[in-house]
Length: 111
Image (cartoon, rainbow, N blue to C red):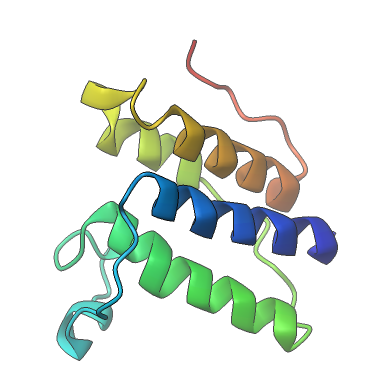
């Protein structure tokens, strides 16, 4: 499973870059310390993906930790990007596949 997860994490990074959502500069430490789901109080969703989710997942894979199986990133992404689903279709697809890989369950995708 982790090989496919590593592939999807790299694809997520490339997709964020392709959509020009990737940031070179890290947000302030206080923003990264949020305890809210998806750090919605301090970060934009794409920032959470880059600076919290990707970092944590890569660390878990590298250290051989058990990966989360109760994930729901795709539903959150569809809510965040609901006004621009077509523009973010590539990102939504990667997140749906990542949710499916981690949970082992199909994701109900928007049409």
